[in-house]
Length: 253
Image (cartoon, rainbow, N blue to C red):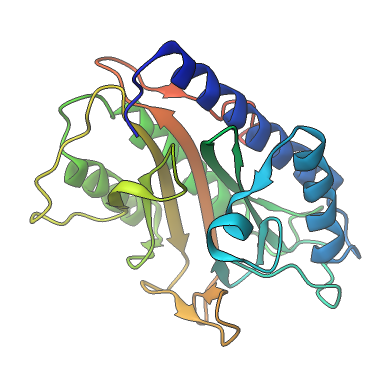
């Protein structure tokens, strides 16, 4: 969406603070031995307490309130009572929600408990690269150049971008124009970031895989023989530094 008024800005701020704080609190709540369903239900409680509705459930009838993906799962993991998180697991939580007609999206990966499998470098690379990409976004910048930056920095870190997943526009719906803000360089994309537009910028990094594949449940996408992470912020594009609406997310510390 393109912000048209102060009311739009406040509406986006409010829902973004809700998804950001929900993500932070879900990360803090997660414990080894807990099922992903229990973690998701905690997220549901947080969203409902603040008058927000799950975006994937509302828009796509997703079978969960949030997406919780583990280890080789890149995104869209279905919460399950049978899926127990373990010490050292690579956990991704993606929280998107709607309130008063405004939608926001926020995600982050982290190591649960002790880093016994040495995943922290991958997590930190994803966070660092997303922060650098956001820092380079302003009105007039080619969207393709942000893809080039993410791809270049990911290769430099020794990882691969997952090419069939991308960031997107957001605001009045979960997915708006631009439909794809890629994590790699595509010279055919000539569109530019517009002032006052709201976009969800994402990094999808993998240890080996360049593509994500359907796990077989119709939702979960996995990076075969790899570990994968995702980080995401919803931002407002300006003439200068972008405004990170989901800054309530402290998963970056």
